[in-house]
Length: 105
Image 1 (tube, rainbow, N blue to C red):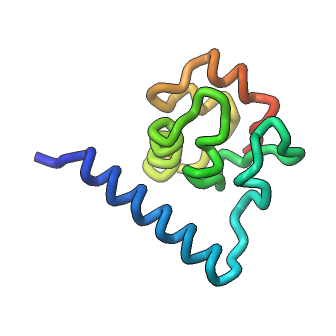
Image 2 (spheres, one colour):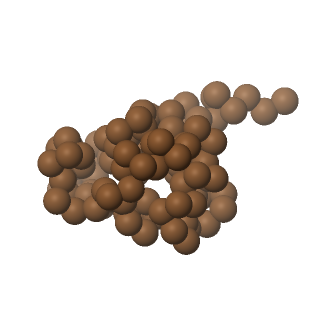
């Protein structure tokens, strides 16, 4: 039986290791303001390219839901509209409404 918790942990570990390496060699993150509070970000977050760290800055989206967004995107392809986030388990209308003005595809 597949242990999805272990797979998710491995994926998160790889993601954070990659981010740390990219930062140490001067790599650019998809969103230059990823460490800023989302309310202060002038740019919208592209849900088709944002990493877990960036997505987790959204209201009501922690690391677990951010990982679910990335997993859904990897398994189903790019989002066609911001509203497609509703297809991700754990993302409902209220979370979408809180963040819709900050999102783009």
